Length: 270
Length: 312
Image (cartoon, rainbow over all chains, first blue to last red):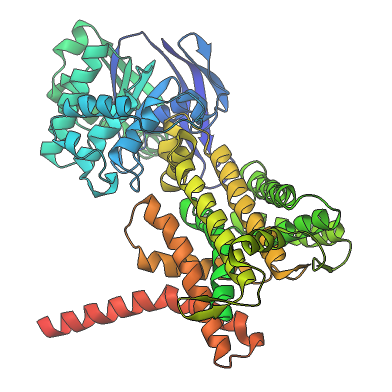
């Protein structure tokens, strides 16, 4: 289970660039839950994922995963429990290395790299079998440098690497946003299949209302560093993209009447 | 012929320097300035131990370990103390100047009457090539000493390069290469990039110090100034090697450092043979590196402009 308690993070505190990115977020995500996170630009969606992944430490609050408090763990240590797929398809793989060498890194995730051969025949066979599942014909190109592949192919391999060893939590940070529609659709299908097959606890950020409505069994809507809506069960199942758009419109309208604007209107008209 | 054999021997020995520079600069993208200090450190440690009667093999190994320590210091300064890579290297290099003087006790140590790897190779070679002043090799007269040392250096350097190549095929070596390629991916796979950088710099400077130890034994002396400009020398070798094996795999890249070092040393030897003032050597080296860095881009843009012009 992922448990976030009153997580607060402010970037550049005390400067003109101060950003209160997370304002006391608390979440409990049970094992096997596929939670989708949506929100406006700058709402704190990706910051929430980075907070869980350990890209920075909290100002206040805590993160616990699989019964362990990981709040003070550095990013690489958390990666033993967390699989990640980034928004940029080029962030999850090492371009100067072959497909097989990248996969070998994922195969020994969580263990200190030793002096054994990175690639052996049994691992290559396993790589071939697992890559074949992607249906991209990459199983015959294991010794090709990954830098020569398309964004969609690299993102599929990153997804495979993130889930090679069953993670306690899978973080997907708008992982189809930079792909062409066809590749994005393929990656989403793969994501659904992999998450369902291993019943992975998943936290996925997306900008797509269709993905938010159709994927997962829980929806978290963020705004200004807070979770403003949390739907699960039947409420999530009934959700349609139009409902989400309507809710965003509500938020936008409310935004135009924030405290300072409301005060200005009060002074003028009342 | 003696000049050619000598140049090849120095080229081989400095291939280890080139390989160390390649690991730091190309694999980790870390502009490590430690090289100038660690090559001297290797020479200094080896010279002092050899004068004390320590076996050449152990003295050489100790020199390499001293280089490993220097690399660790630079790595820790950068990864633990968050000091900029260039400044970390400069700090270590500056400190090493005093360390090297302390190790040597004076600015220059002669090894002329001391048992070294070079003298061992010479003795061993005498059993095959005799003790005469010269032997005929493909019609050329060569000194048995030069030939013995060249063969011994070839064997040793090729063996070390093979070991380095094999190391980079291991889990640890793969993690190091990936760290230079995409640190974000490496962290996401649960490996600490700071540790990989530190270990990589230790390996790089170990090789550079080993190069210094071998160079000292070949030249027959250690000098506290011997490291000045060696970083640029290593870079020149790497750049020449890369231009020859561009786009090759790991094996070819490692060979590139060796070929680059040999070619660069030969070019220098030819230039000196045709009257280049040795005082101008560092300037010429720097100009060569500058040309190798800038010319390909200039020529590329010139070709693109011409192509664009012909289309217009």
